[in-house]
Image 1 (cartoon, one colour):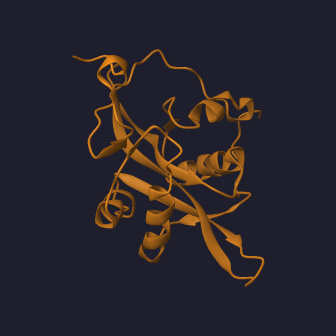
Image 2 (cartoon, one colour):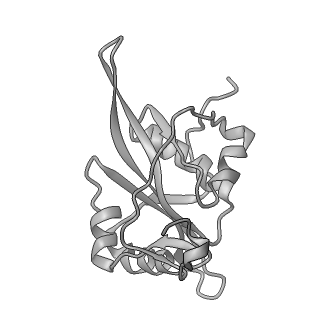
Length: 173
């Protein structure tokens, strides 16, 4: 079975807890490598990523700190859920869509392989990913078997931080 998802993750990935909020917030706000990125308060991060209702799930990866030998959160990955109605069969599929993440320590392929396990354990039917951030790398990983969609997704930007726009370079009047 070429596409069978393993039972156990390779990293120390676990469901995020409220006690992880400060670390997730700091990881999130330090993503200044992008020209444009969302800006959220700690309360917004808690509401968006740590709510853990049936809308969003957030996982953290713990790594052993070489100095203290204790586990510290170094990475996080999240997804949100939408229901897809299949008109022909009248079935409802659960689609997990990769949301926000920050990877500082764990290789991207390891985190996303582990995310597939978490999504399967969470009883999701589909995992989707948009072509933003480092997602092009993830989509290109043959062992993850992502398929290109014909669907176009539009993003509405609010609470985003961006470098100054100059009239001649931003494509607007």
